[in-house]
Amino acid sequence: MPYMKVVVDTMKERGIRDKYIILVGGAPLNEEFGEAVGADAYCRDAAVASEMAKSMVTARRTRTAEPPGPSVN
Image 1 (cartoon, rainbow, N blue to C red):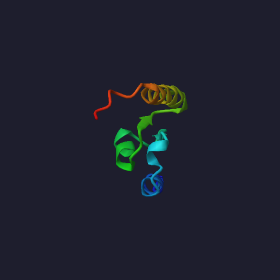
Image 2 (cartoon, rainbow, N blue to C red; image 1 turned 60 degrees about the vertical axis):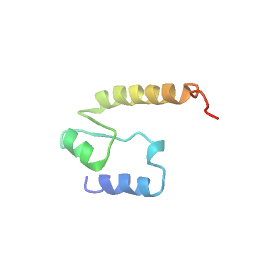
Image 3 (cartoon, rainbow, N blue to C red; image 1 turned 120 degrees about the horizontal axis):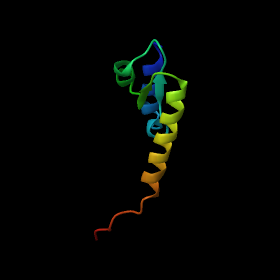
């Protein structure tokens, strides 16, 4: 667990953080820990993580599929 923040920070340094959805969870963790390490979400168990991952991937795909707004010239 002590290296979760290191991993997220390294991803930021390399410019790849926004390409991934990071979920943390399980009995020893909580929402505050997830926020502290820079995770996208905390999930209490694997079943919740699976549903959260599906939801977040769908939301990301919907966002990227939206047509661009009007261009300003």
